[in-house]
Image (tube, rainbow, N blue to C red):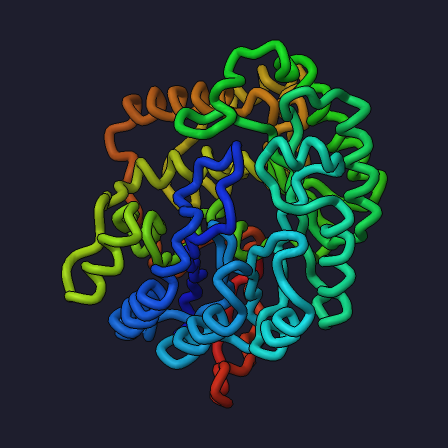
Length: 426
């Protein structure tokens, strides 16, 4: 019962489709909501045997816009998880909402049901720019929603903002940073705009109205500097938090921990297997309702692939990687990787401190290229060793977390049960 897992619930419904959105979501699908709700509940029930082997310590309702799905439905799904899984009372339970898209009454319902974290899609402080992105709210709506959330008792709020928007200049981005910091949220996610094929903004690809790469880089570095001054510590490429308010659920992705997803296009990582469900809500509902297979892609991860993900995912974080930790988990040396990291250090892209390597903000800007080179170096190292996977340590010693020590686990579960054991610290 000591094994922990995060749960992701995909809620693909939106009031309208944003111009930049490339996630699987649908607008105008309200008629499908009841059937989708039933399918999710049934799917969770079918997973009860698998869930029984884990302690659930994070739950994340993402989308789409879960707030648009309605508080009662979100609570019903959460209650189903409590019924079929071992959900800790102090779990981090997050719901994504849009400014102006949820009432104080619904926020109170969510808080009373055990939701304790909100992620609010603010995106920008300029109302005209918000309208051009297809957002249905103003920045004043964002301020009001944060206020209502505080009144409802939420003490852990995250807000999303985007830089590199069409016609956005450095001054406009500075204004968004300042106004967002004034919301006094505990967490800020700061994303660079990516023009994806199939989105409305794709018409702006290679457009002079988009800030160029140098301007976007300046915007990113400005955000890192200014958010630090406002008390937000960078802990991942795009994420900043007041101390103690890092997203526990998202850290599972970046630290290679296990998670189970429900809903169309939802991904899971359990054991050594990654799998995802079909990216079509009608087919998802039909297949779950009739007992058919909903898995669309499945991949058994090899030890070497997991070692590659260690580099790729943990170097997204400011905690970075450790030669000792890497060897203890995978029984593989990283001499060639270290040679590259030392070169990156000379260029100002990497930093070695307290026995760990991590990227600097300038390194994060180039992380896709740098990580690709590191993975090539890792593969080269592998070919030099005859037995790279001689792992004779017991399984529990191969599972490393952000911190290596453990503490006693004496926490309650929803339903009045008690759980005693040990857990890794995030």
